[in-house]
Length: 309
Ligand SMILES: CC(C)(COP(=O)(O)OP(=O)(O)OC[C@H]1O[C@@H](n2cnc3c(N)ncnc32)[C@H](O)[C@@H]1OP(=O)(O)O)[C@@H](O)C(=O)NCCC(=O)NCCS
Image: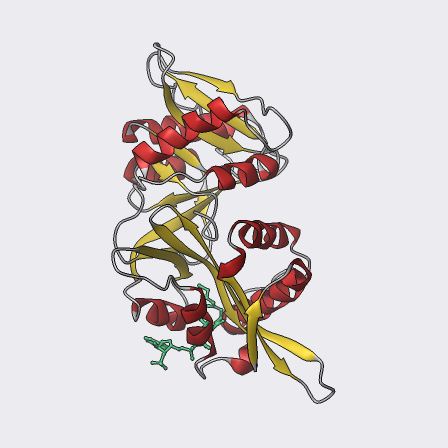
Protein backbone atom coordinates (compact mmCIF):
# COMPACT_ATOMS: atom_id res chain seq x y z
CA UNK A 1 0.00 0.00 0.00
CA UNK A 2 1.24 3.53 -0.74
CA UNK A 3 0.07 7.08 -0.10
CA UNK A 4 0.64 10.03 -2.39
CA UNK A 5 -0.68 13.46 -3.36
CA UNK A 6 -3.72 13.36 -5.65
CA UNK A 7 -3.64 14.68 -9.20
CA UNK A 8 -6.46 15.86 -11.49
CA UNK A 9 -6.35 12.43 -13.15
CA UNK A 10 -7.44 10.78 -9.87
CA UNK A 11 -10.68 12.67 -9.44
CA UNK A 12 -13.00 10.24 -11.24
CA UNK A 13 -11.62 7.40 -9.09
CA UNK A 14 -12.24 9.55 -5.99
CA UNK A 15 -15.85 9.91 -7.11
CA UNK A 16 -16.13 6.13 -7.50
CA UNK A 17 -14.85 5.55 -3.95
CA UNK A 18 -17.18 8.30 -2.64
CA UNK A 19 -20.16 6.64 -4.34
CA UNK A 20 -19.29 3.09 -3.23
CA UNK A 21 -18.58 4.27 0.33
CA UNK A 22 -21.98 5.97 0.61
CA UNK A 23 -23.96 3.24 -1.18
CA UNK A 24 -22.46 0.59 1.12
CA UNK A 25 -24.07 2.02 4.26
CA UNK A 26 -27.10 3.90 2.89
CA UNK A 27 -28.04 0.96 0.62
CA UNK A 28 -28.42 -1.20 3.75
CA UNK A 29 -30.97 1.33 5.02
CA UNK A 30 -32.98 1.20 1.78
CA UNK A 31 -31.72 4.41 0.17
CA UNK A 32 -31.40 4.36 -3.67
CA UNK A 33 -27.87 4.19 -5.13
CA UNK A 34 -25.97 7.40 -5.89
CA UNK A 35 -25.75 8.44 -9.57
CA UNK A 36 -22.63 7.11 -11.32
CA UNK A 37 -21.98 10.48 -12.97
CA UNK A 38 -21.51 13.29 -10.49
CA UNK A 39 -19.87 16.23 -12.30
CA UNK A 40 -20.59 18.67 -9.47
CA UNK A 41 -18.61 16.48 -7.05
CA UNK A 42 -15.70 16.24 -9.50
CA UNK A 43 -15.67 20.05 -9.78
CA UNK A 44 -15.64 20.35 -5.98
CA UNK A 45 -12.70 17.91 -5.81
CA UNK A 46 -10.90 19.88 -8.53
CA UNK A 47 -11.43 23.08 -6.51
CA UNK A 48 -10.09 21.70 -3.22
CA UNK A 49 -7.18 20.05 -5.04
CA UNK A 50 -6.43 23.38 -6.73
CA UNK A 51 -6.44 25.44 -3.52
CA UNK A 52 -4.87 22.85 -1.18
CA UNK A 53 -2.86 20.34 -3.26
CA UNK A 54 -0.84 19.07 -0.25
CA UNK A 55 -4.00 18.25 1.65
CA UNK A 56 -5.52 15.95 -0.97
CA UNK A 57 -4.08 12.47 -0.50
CA UNK A 58 -4.90 9.08 -2.02
CA UNK A 59 -4.03 5.55 -0.87
CA UNK A 60 -3.33 2.84 -3.42
CA UNK A 61 -2.82 -0.87 -3.30
CA UNK A 62 -0.73 -2.55 -5.96
CA UNK A 63 -2.72 -5.37 -7.54
CA UNK A 64 -1.46 -8.68 -8.94
CA UNK A 65 -0.59 -7.22 -12.36
CA UNK A 66 1.35 -4.45 -10.63
CA UNK A 67 -1.23 -1.78 -11.55
CA UNK A 68 -2.06 0.38 -8.53
CA UNK A 69 -5.71 0.58 -7.51
CA UNK A 70 -7.01 3.54 -5.51
CA UNK A 71 -8.65 2.38 -2.27
CA UNK A 72 -9.06 5.61 -0.26
CA UNK A 73 -8.76 9.38 -0.48
CA UNK A 74 -9.06 12.39 1.79
CA UNK A 75 -9.13 16.13 1.12
CA UNK A 76 -9.01 19.17 3.37
CA UNK A 77 -8.72 22.92 2.97
CA UNK A 78 -7.15 25.60 5.17
CA UNK A 79 -8.78 29.01 5.43
CA UNK A 80 -7.07 31.34 7.87
CA UNK A 81 -7.04 29.65 11.29
CA UNK A 82 -9.49 26.97 10.15
CA UNK A 83 -8.69 23.51 8.81
CA UNK A 84 -11.72 21.85 7.24
CA UNK A 85 -11.97 18.22 6.20
CA UNK A 86 -13.88 18.19 2.92
CA UNK A 87 -13.98 14.44 2.20
CA UNK A 88 -12.64 11.14 3.57
CA UNK A 89 -13.65 7.88 1.96
CA UNK A 90 -12.34 4.31 2.05
CA UNK A 91 -13.44 1.56 -0.34
CA UNK A 92 -15.94 -0.65 1.52
CA UNK A 93 -13.76 -3.80 1.40
CA UNK A 94 -10.84 -1.86 2.94
CA UNK A 95 -12.73 -0.21 5.81
CA UNK A 96 -12.23 -0.75 9.55
CA UNK A 97 -8.52 -1.61 9.36
CA UNK A 98 -6.98 1.78 10.13
CA UNK A 99 -6.84 3.21 6.59
CA UNK A 100 -9.25 6.12 7.14
CA UNK A 101 -7.27 7.17 10.21
CA UNK A 102 -3.98 6.88 8.28
CA UNK A 103 -5.21 9.13 5.42
CA UNK A 104 -6.62 11.61 7.94
CA UNK A 105 -3.32 11.83 9.81
CA UNK A 106 -1.59 12.68 6.51
CA UNK A 107 -3.83 15.66 5.82
CA UNK A 108 -4.36 17.04 9.35
CA UNK A 109 -2.17 20.06 10.19
CA UNK A 110 1.19 19.09 11.67
CA UNK A 111 0.82 21.72 14.38
CA UNK A 112 -2.63 21.26 15.88
CA UNK A 113 -2.30 23.44 18.97
CA UNK A 114 -4.73 26.34 18.75
CA UNK A 115 -5.97 25.25 15.30
CA UNK A 116 -9.69 25.17 14.55
CA UNK A 117 -10.42 21.73 13.11
CA UNK A 118 -13.80 21.12 11.53
CA UNK A 119 -15.78 18.87 9.22
CA UNK A 120 -19.31 17.67 8.43
CA UNK A 121 -20.47 14.08 8.82
CA UNK A 122 -23.53 12.01 8.12
CA UNK A 123 -25.50 11.52 11.33
CA UNK A 124 -26.26 7.96 10.11
CA UNK A 125 -22.54 7.04 10.17
CA UNK A 126 -21.09 6.29 13.64
CA UNK A 127 -17.64 5.37 12.24
CA UNK A 128 -16.77 8.81 10.84
CA UNK A 129 -18.34 10.58 13.82
CA UNK A 130 -16.26 8.45 16.21
CA UNK A 131 -13.06 8.71 14.15
CA UNK A 132 -13.13 12.54 13.98
CA UNK A 133 -14.26 12.86 17.60
CA UNK A 134 -11.12 10.94 18.60
CA UNK A 135 -9.19 14.00 17.26
CA UNK A 136 -11.45 16.42 19.19
CA UNK A 137 -13.56 17.19 16.07
CA UNK A 138 -16.83 16.46 17.85
CA UNK A 139 -20.40 16.67 16.40
CA UNK A 140 -22.00 19.87 17.74
CA UNK A 141 -24.82 21.06 15.48
CA UNK A 142 -27.05 19.59 12.77
CA UNK A 143 -27.02 20.98 9.24
CA UNK A 144 -30.49 20.79 7.73
CA UNK A 145 -30.82 20.53 3.95
CA UNK A 146 -33.99 22.47 3.30
CA UNK A 147 -35.34 21.49 -0.12
CA UNK A 148 -38.19 22.22 -2.52
CA UNK A 149 -40.09 25.37 -3.40
CA UNK A 150 -42.26 27.70 -1.32
CA UNK A 151 -45.90 26.75 -1.53
CA UNK A 152 -48.31 28.47 -3.94
CA UNK A 153 -49.39 31.87 -2.65
CA UNK A 154 -46.44 32.28 -0.25
CA UNK A 155 -45.03 35.79 -0.14
CA UNK A 156 -41.40 36.32 0.92
CA UNK A 157 -40.76 38.65 3.86
CA UNK A 158 -39.59 42.12 2.74
CA UNK A 159 -35.89 42.92 2.94
CA UNK A 160 -35.08 44.81 6.17
CA UNK A 161 -35.97 48.52 6.11
CA UNK A 162 -33.51 50.50 3.98
CA UNK A 163 -31.78 47.40 2.57
CA UNK A 164 -31.61 46.93 -1.20
CA UNK A 165 -30.33 44.00 -3.28
CA UNK A 166 -28.32 44.17 -6.51
CA UNK A 167 -26.63 41.48 -8.55
CA UNK A 168 -22.82 41.72 -8.57
CA UNK A 169 -21.26 41.78 -12.03
CA UNK A 170 -18.01 39.79 -12.20
CA UNK A 171 -15.03 41.60 -13.73
CA UNK A 172 -14.37 38.40 -15.72
CA UNK A 173 -16.27 35.09 -15.63
CA UNK A 174 -15.79 33.71 -12.11
CA UNK A 175 -13.72 36.66 -10.90
CA UNK A 176 -14.73 39.77 -8.99
CA UNK A 177 -12.89 43.06 -9.21
CA UNK A 178 -10.34 43.31 -6.33
CA UNK A 179 -12.31 46.03 -4.49
CA UNK A 180 -15.51 43.95 -4.70
CA UNK A 181 -13.67 40.87 -3.41
CA UNK A 182 -12.17 42.89 -0.54
CA UNK A 183 -15.65 43.96 0.47
CA UNK A 184 -16.89 40.35 0.64
CA UNK A 185 -13.76 39.29 2.52
CA UNK A 186 -14.36 42.04 5.11
CA UNK A 187 -17.89 40.75 5.69
CA UNK A 188 -16.62 37.15 5.99
CA UNK A 189 -14.05 38.31 8.55
CA UNK A 190 -16.75 40.10 10.51
CA UNK A 191 -19.11 37.08 10.45
CA UNK A 192 -16.72 34.13 10.85
CA UNK A 193 -13.23 35.50 11.52
CA UNK A 194 -11.74 34.10 8.29
CA UNK A 195 -12.02 35.01 4.62
CA UNK A 196 -12.07 32.63 1.66
CA UNK A 197 -11.70 34.50 -1.64
CA UNK A 198 -10.67 31.27 -3.40
CA UNK A 199 -14.06 29.74 -2.53
CA UNK A 200 -15.92 32.82 -3.77
CA UNK A 201 -14.27 32.27 -7.15
CA UNK A 202 -15.58 28.67 -7.12
CA UNK A 203 -19.04 29.74 -5.94
CA UNK A 204 -19.29 32.41 -8.62
CA UNK A 205 -18.61 29.82 -11.34
CA UNK A 206 -21.06 27.32 -9.80
CA UNK A 207 -23.81 29.77 -8.76
CA UNK A 208 -23.46 32.82 -10.94
CA UNK A 209 -26.15 34.94 -9.26
CA UNK A 210 -24.27 36.76 -6.50
CA UNK A 211 -26.42 39.38 -4.77
CA UNK A 212 -25.05 42.10 -2.54
CA UNK A 213 -27.31 43.76 0.01
CA UNK A 214 -26.62 47.32 1.14
CA UNK A 215 -28.12 49.56 3.79
CA UNK A 216 -29.23 53.14 3.16
CA UNK A 217 -25.65 54.36 3.65
CA UNK A 218 -24.35 51.98 0.97
CA UNK A 219 -22.65 49.69 3.49
CA UNK A 220 -22.54 45.96 2.56
CA UNK A 221 -24.75 44.17 5.09
CA UNK A 222 -25.08 40.76 3.37
CA UNK A 223 -24.20 38.70 0.34
CA UNK A 224 -25.72 35.51 -1.06
CA UNK A 225 -25.41 33.21 -4.08
CA UNK A 226 -28.11 31.43 -6.02
CA UNK A 227 -28.45 29.71 -9.39
CA UNK A 228 -30.92 28.40 -11.93
CA UNK A 229 -30.22 24.84 -10.73
CA UNK A 230 -31.60 25.80 -7.33
CA UNK A 231 -28.52 25.71 -5.11
CA UNK A 232 -28.57 28.63 -2.67
CA UNK A 233 -25.53 29.70 -0.60
CA UNK A 234 -23.12 30.67 0.68
CA UNK A 235 -24.90 33.51 2.47
CA UNK A 236 -23.36 35.88 5.03
CA UNK A 237 -25.30 38.56 6.91
CA UNK A 238 -23.98 41.18 9.32
CA UNK A 239 -27.11 40.98 11.48
CA UNK A 240 -28.59 37.54 12.29
CA UNK A 241 -32.16 38.82 11.93
CA UNK A 242 -31.42 39.42 8.21
CA UNK A 243 -30.67 35.76 7.44
CA UNK A 244 -34.20 34.64 6.59
CA UNK A 245 -35.20 37.78 4.59
CA UNK A 246 -31.99 37.44 2.53
CA UNK A 247 -32.47 33.67 2.04
CA UNK A 248 -36.11 34.27 1.05
CA UNK A 249 -35.00 36.92 -1.47
CA UNK A 250 -32.48 34.45 -2.96
CA UNK A 251 -35.18 31.76 -3.15
CA UNK A 252 -37.40 33.98 -5.26
CA UNK A 253 -35.01 36.31 -7.15
CA UNK A 254 -33.91 33.58 -9.60
CA UNK A 255 -36.62 30.93 -10.03
CA UNK A 256 -34.86 27.56 -10.41
CA UNK A 257 -35.70 24.95 -13.02
CA UNK A 258 -36.52 22.46 -10.22
CA UNK A 259 -36.21 22.48 -6.43
CA UNK A 260 -34.18 24.89 -4.32
CA UNK A 261 -31.67 23.59 -1.78
CA UNK A 262 -30.16 25.45 1.20
CA UNK A 263 -28.00 24.15 4.08
CA UNK A 264 -29.05 25.92 7.28
CA UNK A 265 -27.17 25.29 10.49
CA UNK A 266 -29.41 24.29 13.40
CA UNK A 267 -28.38 27.55 15.14
CA UNK A 268 -30.36 29.52 12.49
CA UNK A 269 -33.63 29.10 14.41
CA UNK A 270 -35.84 31.57 12.58
CA UNK A 271 -34.56 30.69 9.08
CA UNK A 272 -35.17 26.95 9.62
CA UNK A 273 -38.63 27.53 11.09
CA UNK A 274 -39.67 30.03 8.41
CA UNK A 275 -38.39 27.85 5.54
CA UNK A 276 -40.43 24.86 6.73
CA UNK A 277 -43.47 27.11 7.25
CA UNK A 278 -42.99 28.41 3.66
CA UNK A 279 -43.35 24.83 2.38
CA UNK A 280 -39.75 23.66 1.98
CA UNK A 281 -38.98 20.19 3.28
CA UNK A 282 -36.25 18.08 4.91
CA UNK A 283 -35.12 14.80 3.37
CA UNK A 284 -32.91 12.07 4.76
CA UNK A 285 -30.80 12.35 7.90
CA UNK A 286 -29.27 15.62 9.10
CA UNK A 287 -25.59 16.22 8.52
CA UNK A 288 -23.58 16.96 11.67
CA UNK A 289 -21.24 19.93 11.87
CA UNK A 290 -18.22 18.84 13.91
CA UNK A 291 -15.55 21.11 15.33
CA UNK A 292 -12.73 21.24 17.84
CA UNK A 293 -13.63 24.86 18.72
CA UNK A 294 -16.26 27.21 17.25
CA UNK A 295 -15.15 28.44 13.81
CA UNK A 296 -18.22 30.03 12.21
CA UNK A 297 -21.39 31.85 13.25
CA UNK A 298 -24.19 29.76 11.80
CA UNK A 299 -26.81 32.28 12.91
CA UNK A 300 -25.25 34.58 10.25
CA UNK A 301 -23.69 32.18 7.75
CA UNK A 302 -24.93 29.51 5.34
CA UNK A 303 -22.19 27.42 3.71
CA UNK A 304 -21.78 26.34 0.08
CA UNK A 305 -22.33 22.70 1.10
CA UNK A 306 -21.17 20.25 3.79
CA UNK A 307 -18.08 19.62 1.63
CA UNK A 308 -17.06 23.28 1.38
CA UNK A 309 -17.70 25.68 4.21
C1 LIG B 1 -15.47 6.74 7.69
C2 LIG B 1 -14.30 6.05 7.03
C3 LIG B 1 -13.54 7.05 6.15
C4 LIG B 1 -13.33 5.57 8.13
O1 LIG B 1 -12.28 4.84 7.56
P1 LIG B 1 -11.94 3.35 8.09
O2 LIG B 1 -10.70 2.93 7.41
O3 LIG B 1 -13.15 2.49 7.93
O4 LIG B 1 -11.70 3.63 9.64
P2 LIG B 1 -10.45 3.30 10.55
O5 LIG B 1 -10.31 1.82 10.66
O6 LIG B 1 -9.25 4.05 10.11
O7 LIG B 1 -10.87 3.99 11.93
C5 LIG B 1 -12.00 3.56 12.58
C6 LIG B 1 -12.16 4.45 13.78
O8 LIG B 1 -13.51 4.91 13.83
C7 LIG B 1 -13.90 5.02 15.17
N1 LIG B 1 -15.11 4.21 15.32
C8 LIG B 1 -15.54 3.18 14.56
N2 LIG B 1 -16.73 2.77 14.97
C9 LIG B 1 -17.08 3.55 16.02
C10 LIG B 1 -18.19 3.62 16.87
N3 LIG B 1 -19.24 2.82 16.73
N4 LIG B 1 -18.20 4.56 17.84
C11 LIG B 1 -17.15 5.41 17.98
N5 LIG B 1 -16.07 5.37 17.19
C12 LIG B 1 -16.03 4.46 16.23
C13 LIG B 1 -12.76 4.54 16.04
O9 LIG B 1 -12.04 5.68 16.43
C14 LIG B 1 -11.94 3.72 15.08
O10 LIG B 1 -10.60 3.76 15.36
P3 LIG B 1 -9.93 2.58 16.25
O11 LIG B 1 -10.41 1.29 15.64
O12 LIG B 1 -8.48 2.83 16.10
O13 LIG B 1 -10.49 2.81 17.63
C15 LIG B 1 -14.74 4.84 6.18
O14 LIG B 1 -15.33 3.87 7.04
C16 LIG B 1 -15.72 5.19 5.07
O15 LIG B 1 -15.31 5.57 3.99
N6 LIG B 1 -17.02 5.05 5.36
C17 LIG B 1 -18.08 5.32 4.41
C18 LIG B 1 -18.11 6.73 3.95
C19 LIG B 1 -18.10 7.77 5.06
O16 LIG B 1 -18.92 7.73 5.94
N7 LIG B 1 -17.15 8.70 4.94
C20 LIG B 1 -17.10 9.83 5.82
C21 LIG B 1 -18.00 10.89 5.34
S1 LIG B 1 -18.37 12.02 6.60
